[in-house]
Length: 69
Image (cartoon, rainbow, N blue to C red; front, top):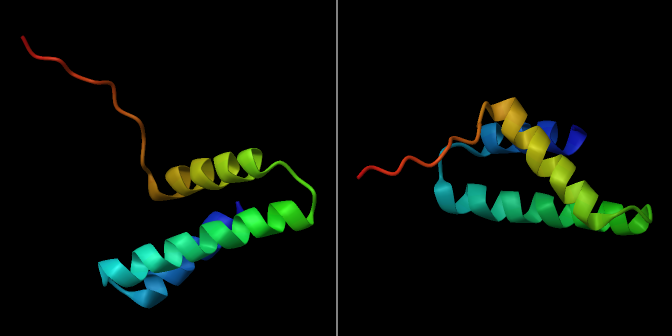
């Protein structure tokens, strides 16, 4: 949860430049993976927790597929 809060703060600080936001997001994901490896935790679980908490804090929800005939 701390990583997602940090991500949101960094992205707000950076502004609306998409290329810089993508670079910052990749860097923060790498930091999350590195922290998981240093702490000998599961990288998969760290990334799942990171992605889930980012989605919760931004209000992103999964929507079902709609197939129109």
